Length: 302
Ligand code: SF4
Image (cartoon, rainbow, N blue to C red; front, side, top):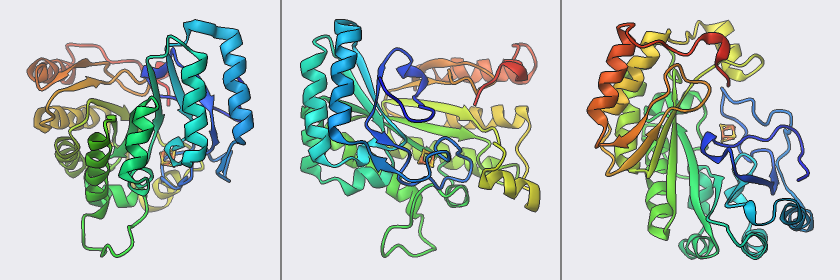
């Protein structure tokens, strides 16, 4: 009910009560991201404040709350002595509660023990949104998609592997995972490699939910400086749709709900993979040949 700075949540959490239990992002280094640059120092919100907010939301919204999204950028990092009372309080306050979710980095997941992850699921935290953004190791490193684990050599695919390990660990604990990929993240130079690598990572992470966003280069981000100074080029729309086509055509999740309903995208799509793969690929082909209109540039959001 009380928020510090801008608060972000995935499109599918549009109707959720957002509890801001952490402020900022503990990593805050991804080169394209400016979501928490106004909160450069990550911190846990005092537990008492979070609990007060839950009580306030309970009085305001009562039983209408069915979903809660715990913000900010990688709230899973919160220690267990914050998560336990928060999850218990959410369950006690909202009798109609069906789902609690948060953003998580691969590192957040790997830093929790298996027992802690299982306990979080048993307390009601059921869904983690993870954004590898790409499965192309070079692209992932260029956009700074996480730290290099201790002992990993520079030649290894450590960011790809870290995300696969995190997905396996989270799912083994009982979480559902939602993965997010970023069209354009490789620039023109890595566009194809980015798409092929992303399809491979989708297959390896095997998420329950899969979504794609489209990159907008935000002024004053490190990526913007790279664009200005080193000739990095954002792909044009047909190439961005081509990336999406490769990802959809090549990824082999077991049964993932796929969506491109984020405001940044040129073409909203939805379906299940693999069941609806051909329909989605055909729709992309129609869009690429100009037979389906795209979202106009003016109506896109970040
Ligand atoms: S982990 Fe997420 S919130 Fe944090 S800097 Fe990267 S994209 Fe932004």
